[in-house]
Image 1: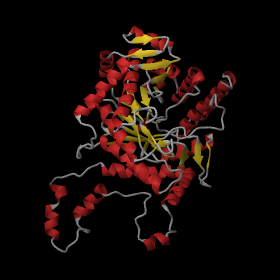
Image 2: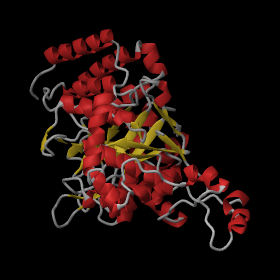
Image 3: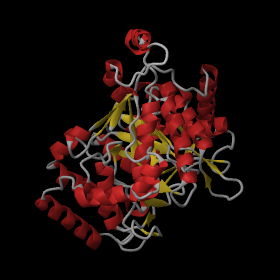
Image 4: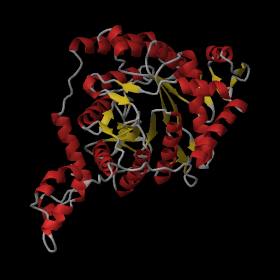
Length: 491
């Protein structure tokens, strides 16, 4: 499945009218023009923005973006975006006509498949989780669900990218951290990507990673990450800008206010990218959430679905291809709470028309990766997509002739009309049990979680994506070994 083509049969779910979208746009421009964005560790970026018409206070590292400049660059930004996989059959075109699902990223813990207990993640965990993601049709991309905490911090991101590339043929991006080593690490990541692609020319033709950066809400950029994004953009890599505000903490608690600050960060990021690399394809990620005022933690659930649905509409106002978060759950273990939180936070942005819904496979807001959740979230993807196909109404589907033939007291089970259409209109779950109680007991009376665990174990036994050539794997290992020797071990 990978990419689901949006249907026009059903009206889009909407939480904002045209006047509200105009108001959010104008409020965002006002914030950028009067309050601005702080860009720390970014003197060259500050100078570039000043040279292009922004007002810059170098001492305060503050940039004020003129409204006309923001609107001009946003208007000129190419909106179509392609995520390339190692295998071209998994390429994902973000064109406004498809919906894709992806996993969460860089969870620090993994739920052990044997014991069910949380523990620090390892590279082996990442490799296994990536293989499971590769096997599940609902996921368009995968490979960063967790991170290799058993590897040195200064080169951990290189291990993560190498592990992902070797265990999925789908798109899988890279990260670079810590920020102090970001420029050097980016060069090593480029070497790894070049080795996997086969040459610099092939990498430029089909970049199997993309550039981009995430803001530091409220209204701040880490200049070193922006520099990396601009470097990759100038090399021709597609670029992305993400914002992850927390309503009541790093954004206003009101949804409208949270959308304004998020949108201001996104627009200023797009403007910065386009001024440095005009014409580069750019995507946006509105990854929105709220602070739980009782616990002081990230709150999860239906209100996030509402926020992200609003974010989709704001992004579509500009014609952007947009990622938003879904599959949000505060729960620490698989079960009823997790399932309802994930379903509620996923279906609303899908109904609103999101291009990518991000976040599958994790628990407690991205704190732990779970094999079982990967499997169960795949079921949610399939169910949600079935729901949003809408209802097709024409002479064939109205079935008046069939109804008249069956008449009062008859049945439709053996009718050709039923045989012709049931596979298209009904949802056939792969994991959910719909048998009677007696039949369920005869097959072991297994819970959904146990069935998901067994499915994950089956995939790990049987599914092996085409690995990188052994010579390429060796080259990548040598790149990582060289990085370990050349980079400082403590920052």
